[in-house]
Length: 168
Image (cartoon, rainbow, N blue to C red; front, side, top):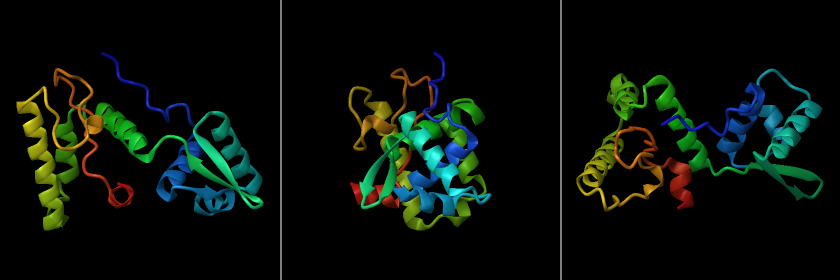
């Protein structure tokens, strides 16, 4: 079974940078995007790139007075899952275990007790889900493995970040 093409694969480096800014901020004007970009691009260049991203279907705008405010079309959670799936497939041979080991390897000593408890809970829920394949764990199945036979170890979205917990 081949790897699914990530939503961001057809974007230029600068377009990906703009999308990263929009995902991080949630929404932004062209001037805010420009201020966040490295290299001091011109205002017209940023507006053109935002218009192209809109034509490609990646962003949409809302008019607020005389300004356009841009936001990503793809929900942040879905984009995160896609990017993480791509990262795991590309750099860790599809192995969630290898990705988690790399992530926690040298950084585990910097985790707080509440962070370690949340990670332990996620691992426990994953074990429960494997033991009862017909039932889902308490978390939404949207972040679970893509393959129903458990052969692929991708889709490890983990706990929601602070912004997403606020949205829930």
